Length: 203
Image (cartoon, rainbow, N blue to C red; front, side, top):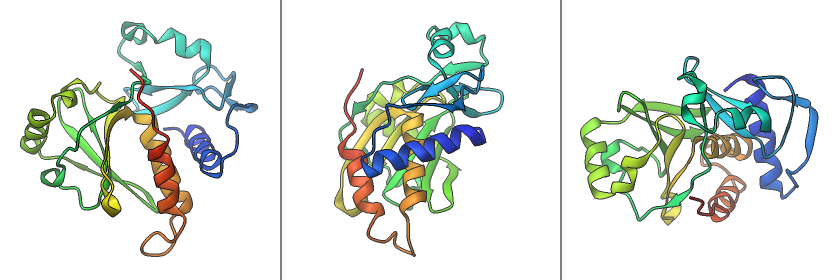
C-alpha cells in the first residue's frame, strides 16, 4: 500500500469508527493509477509486482473488472464477504485471537495480526492450512492476494469471514488508531466490536 493509500485507509477507518460519513469526495486525494480524485468509498487494486494495495477511481477500477485486463500486473480487490462457521486457527500459529490470512499465487499463506505498530506477518504452516481448508472448504475459494480469512476470537467472540483484503487493512488501521497501553485500553475493543458487527455478507 502506498503512503497515500495507507493514509486514506487510516482516515476512512477513523471516520467509520467515530460514526462520521465517508461518502464525500476529497479532490486532494488522488487515484494511485491516474491521479484523478477518488471518493471515500473507492475501490482498490493490488499491484502484483510491488505487492501493494493501490487506491483506484471508478474509471480505473472498471478497467480491471476482468482479471485479464491487468495483464497480470494489477488485480481488482473484490467486494465479496462470506460469513464462515468457526475455523480452528490454533494450528496456524495465531498467538492472538485477531488475525487474517492471505493466500498467495504460489499457494503459500501469510498470516497477519494487528498491533499498535501495524500488522505482524509470518508464513502459516502449509499442512495446518490444508487441514483448515479440509474442515472449511470455502477457504479453498480465496482469491490469491486480494481476499483473506479474517478471524476474531478475542474476548470470547467467534467471527470468521472471507473478506476483501482492504477490509483487513481498515481493521489494522483501526487498531493502530485506538490501541492504548499494553492491553489496548478501553477504546480499541468496542471499536473492533463495531467493525465486525457492521460486516455484511456480499457475494
